[in-house]
Length: 611
View 1 (cartoon, rainbow, N blue to C red):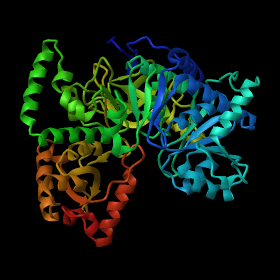
View 2 (cartoon, helix red, strand yellow; view 1 turned 60 degrees about the horizontal axis):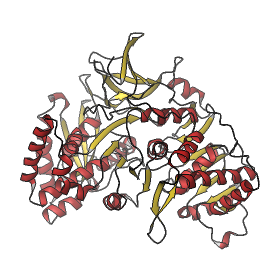
View 3 (cartoon, helix red, strand yellow; view 1 turned 120 degrees about the vertical axis):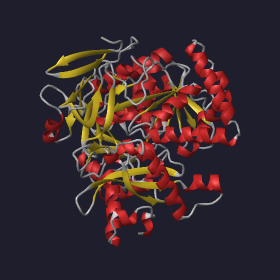
């Protein structure tokens, strides 16, 4: 048994189970989580954010707990016991108050993607049997339009004060007034909410996976699912009072919901809310951020910006020398990275010490590069259906190119491995969902009789228990010779080409039936203008990218080389966690080629918008 994991053989499979390192403060449900944190951390700031005048203000753990209780008491007084209540909003303090006032004694929370258009919001309201909805002021017009025809919704609850023009519609109420109402009821002896007993195994959170409403699945999660995952994370990653987390990924997504909100609250971390992707660098400094939970696209952009800054400052040579000195000192047990690279951190984020990445493959170079200056970057893996974290690197092991070990109490195995040990990753544990909402057939396909959940991802587990993801089963490219290739592997390499912002790779079927690896490159026009003062011509870009791809092809087997590429100025279609929507991107390319009657061989090196 290795420290942190247990490796056994079960039914012919190598099964790796996480054991953990730290002794955690266990939590059985989310109500206990909030109450325990209010007791342990009291008047310390749990949240910091800006008011409408741009002034930074804070909310303590005690205030957070009290506002949840007051709002929950008001919701019960409105007849919303056991109701499905949706939340749609940008990341903000009120989101967490709304969410926990629902799940900790009222009913079922239904977080909605903040980027959904009106028609999809309406569809999910119907699919989720939603009775009330919390919303931020930016959705006021949408709520008015929905309320004109929707008879299901009993209450539309705005996170800010409501415009007086709505005073005639009793369905529209403000969250602030409900908190005041709940406080009055509580002070008068109403303990209906605070004395609620939590059924930890009951459906409490309904999350819809990304995709259109017709293809998205409703994932049913319980307090036991999420609380077990929060507890498991605390056995591997140590954070606590004094740390500040910058919340920037959407809270409706389980990655930010479990890790960026609940894990942080449980651990006594102060959560600061980001003003937007463009303001990450500014927010890291002004809030004194120490922790960051992000997706690879954000972290890779930060790394490239750091490298560009070093290059433009004329200190690239000195930086390399300091790196070599630092590496030698570390072999002797002397770690001076934060001192040696203090000027780099002044630009990156003076107090930033730890970043956690998930949702997509991470370029190993970024992990190594940040580590050399003293910033720990951990790659993890999970799914909405697993609450979400299945495995991650941690404070004790951080092996690049892998997702580390399973979390404590979670088992991972490879189903039907091929000759190289690659197969579908399956997992089992208390974090696995209850099932898909109103879809027993899909549930039976996903979870077998022994409780193993089929992730749909392919990977391997080595003899030391490290898990590697090779790609999604659905996106796997089967070449003419039967060999397999994965778009994600190529995209990590292509995204490092100067002038490429992002990329999309697919298997193109040629007229003769041959399967060719092809790529769509998104040109980083802003970066090119910054570096060259002008955007190169189409011909110049094609030549530069062609040369870079030829160099990449030298590092991979001949049968897997990238054959052709096209260019675009348009960003790829992505989910709110910045994953590529592959079917939609493939349709865009195919439509453009069909429109002109060209195949990839003739279109290669051209801007696809001009085809």
